Length: 455
Ligand code: UDP
Image 1 (spheres, rainbow, N blue to C red):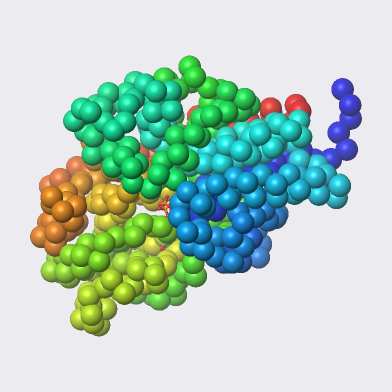
Image 2: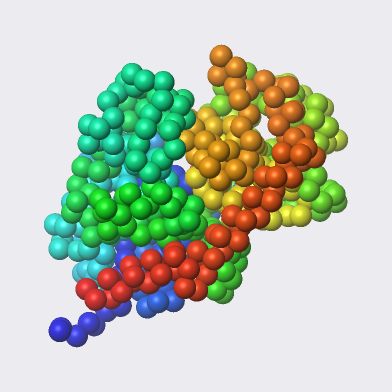
């Protein structure tokens, strides 16, 4: 065998959004102590808004999506964005791989986001290993895979859907791009076409863990060479095996850390409702209003993340009126918040990272899915993992204030709350076991590393 003159080098290419960068960067951090160099490639516009922890050990490089100023928000639509990301992204990823090679850092493997299958074509042009990383659950991807294969026809003609490895789902429990067929066609094509070249991928990675999605993983391993490597929370929150791995290291929004933590510090144990809809969801104004008054009338303490671009949807003077019980911030250090002993409940949009974080930290949830995969994640939270209750919307799709109030009270002080807290603790243990030494995710990471080292 030819002697290696460089460390094996993995290039990580996430879709440019917080919920994709976090898990893929964390995966990269797990590779470093195993003798692998890792570089994360993100788009120019995302790079410009990144707040990067100066001690981060993963190198960062840029590619382009064709919108170097504003990224997705500069594009006219999801269709335009996804097409441009593919076209300009392919060209600039090729140039990056070439440049890294010329600079003495040749790339061994490309780990690319499932949303960007074109990255696999580029990896193969250079004769590199290509591994796909899915930041959405196995269940959600199995639904999209069935659509891709023509095994599930759209628009849905039945009120329920049966897919191998999954519980029977009501149509509304499938991802929004499926049950609300025709909404966001650009994103619909992107999620369904994730599988266009998957048979050429050397490995298929999922940010989940075996016991969490056992039945669907057992079905999918018959399709692909699959590894479950999650949950990808920083090691400090799980196995504590990696020194100094305490946060996600890259944030696209500036967290109000001091304001949040000092506010939480004098609140009683398990008394605070933490509310966040993640980095992308855009709730209707009426929904924000109902949520606001529901939180206020619950009389619970609440810490609510309302991104700057969403703030105009808050009722006038709400922040001041509710200030006795509540704090509204534009972004927070979510992991630090969730592990604060004052937190009693998480009202979440059910983005997969938020769900995995709550599960791994034993926090009960109130599920308020907004779009995309969140509706399916909410189904699993409430009916499969049983670590949360669903805040149901009315016929207009709005969760009313009375429902918000009832749900948070039920979780903080009700009987159902006790039961789901117990389940949450069980999942916390199972998540730690998966990433701990010899656990299913730890083993899958080792297997991945061995494949790269053998190259
Ligand atoms: N997050 C955070 N601070 C906030 C809100 C969210 O750090 O105020 C993090 C959260 O911990 C998670 C990510 O942002 O890791 C959001 O990902 P998720 O999949 O939950 O939702 P998305 O933003 O993709 O809809």
